[in-house]
Image (cartoon, rainbow, N blue to C red):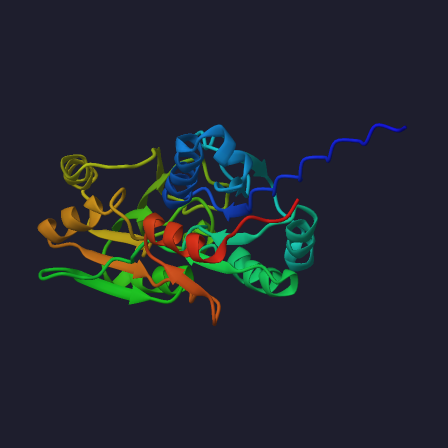
Length: 277
């Protein structure tokens, strides 16, 4: 008489998979929150899929990014279709676009890819800056508009718009530029340029001294938001300097937006559940 085989244990459901796009501080914070959530769980609870698996995707534009929790991939996806294919092949259950507020190309790719792959999408965007009493702000829609506005506002420019797109200012030979970026920009650059390689967060005292030492009389920045680089705005207000500020591009229509990693975490709780093995 054959001995009956013991019933096999049911397969454990796989944890949901979250893809986070971006190398921003908010992306790093959200990945850290999710990683700590997993670490707090009992091993058996983790096996049941209560905590999501996280992949953080970086564009690869920064040679030495800060360390990130979770799995990390570097490089592009090959446009909308490539990202949609990656979402399907890696069984992504939720997509978080936590790229820089001015990385509008990848944001539109993410919106289309999420729709194609039927994956819920959230845009995580830090709040933008707003002018306060005493600010002399000159909002513009692009770097080209910023360049056109400068000659009427000053001669010694503190340019803090990042290392990309500086060609817009290359023809302003009558102006002097202090260009601050994390990594060295590629030419063309303005003829009269002093390059300052530095990474925030920056202090108010440091920004005051920088404006004084270089005799800056106009500041150019993007509305990146956040506290890490905001002290330059306070220093400019105190010194009575005009600030040319590039407005953010719009978030793709129909995409839900969260303004803090904690809010993104709450959104994930409502959209994720254990995925069958």
